[in-house]
Amino acid sequence: MQYPIGRVDVPEIVDMTHIHRWIEDMQRTPSHLREAVQGLSQSQLDTPYRPGGWTVRQVIHHLPDSHAQAYLNFRLGLAQSRPEARSAPINAWASMPDSLAGEIEPSLALFNGLQARWVLLLKTLSRSDFDRTIHFPNQGDRSLATLLAIYAWHGKHHVKHITALRDRMGW
Image 1 (tube, rainbow, N blue to C red):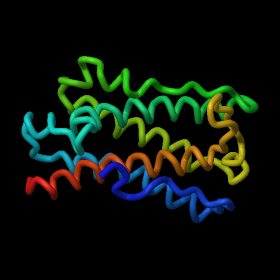
Image 2: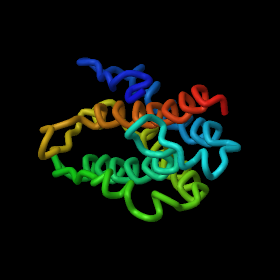
Image 3: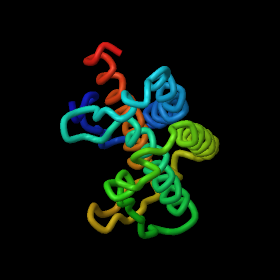
């Protein structure tokens, strides 16, 4: 239940076929998220996707929070040479009142707009742009291609949390 599509898998050698597939995933995920939550009641939104996990509502709010941080890191990676990444305190953010009880529509809209903007940028980049790196204090250097792979996976991962819960619960 924790990794319903498996863990992220970034190939050692990334080619443009991978990059194009990840960009397509980034573009499709907002509509898949909206479909996944269509028609859910307030109590269903407040159901954890797994024991000890976040609620569906928290997952919905987490996606634009996390992807906004990653998008800004990605842009830093394009604008600077090996910038220091900022990491998001995702558990603290998921515990804030807006994540615990806020309406989901603003986060769905924010995620849609954010992903559209990121995809617009991604489609303008050259292959060498994806080789640029960002330094993460706890993980070392990561290429922009790796960051793209992670966030293409991340969106699908959380959508699957919601659809798997719906399947298990018969919603």
